Image (cartoon, rainbow, N blue to C red; front, side):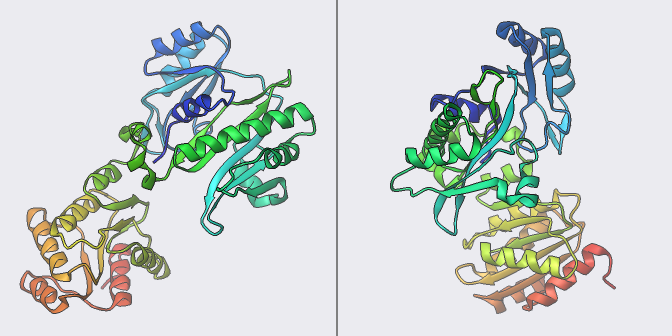
Length: 380
């Protein structure tokens, strides 16, 4: 689950991280009023769950309250990568001397949180990692002990030669780590961490991604979810207990099991297609899941063919077949459907499909190639 910048900043502020004053506005009038309240130049920043807000025109410097009103008018309602801006963060604009990057991710290889810090912070940190990796320091944290002071200081001195600035950065890193752990994050970052011309070290941006598996124990964090900033299909899938991620391809995939779903997407790419989604219906033998899956996928206008790839273990293939029949009777498909079923009750599933005018295969490669051909117009 993604948090908005203003939500991440509020969590960081509660943990002691120095954050410029700021608040949310949903109208130009409110943005102007906030600029008047702060009495200094402000930044007006679009709040959407995508990167590249600045490059899209969603982050603006405003020297006066009137400018804040004008920029908020332009940003509110803006479309940024398919998401409509419904609120902006109006925050005090800090003078920036230098920019650094500080972030934490969960490294599944080492099974530890790993810090990434770089003095080359700013919006192009991904380019820094790709072209000059020596400018980034990686530091795994032993979760038994947390981030100890000497470890934080080592990273602080990697960023700054000045002792006071290194100490300030080290303290911020310990506060960031505390927020990361307590909020159930899979990622938390400050980009940029700035040093002002007067020598203050301040976090002027913040990002947090919450591990969905943590939400059950963190109801206060789950309450921060903003469904209006998420893909409508992903919201619907979550409510239907489906694991779904929308992609940009043309082959809709309905698969049971995360591993098979990933393998199916790889095979679609291998045969020249592009998956339109990751969708795992899980191990449940519930035809309603199939009905919901088809409804979500067919709402995507980019989908030119749908591929069912079901390996029946716990999942009964006859239940999947019944789900396909039920869903297509209620909402007839306008794109071709390719079905691969094998495993539990396979013969019965094939019989159900045949009786209802569907054909199915037990060969995965054959089914994927067929789906790709139909999606790309190569089928004869």
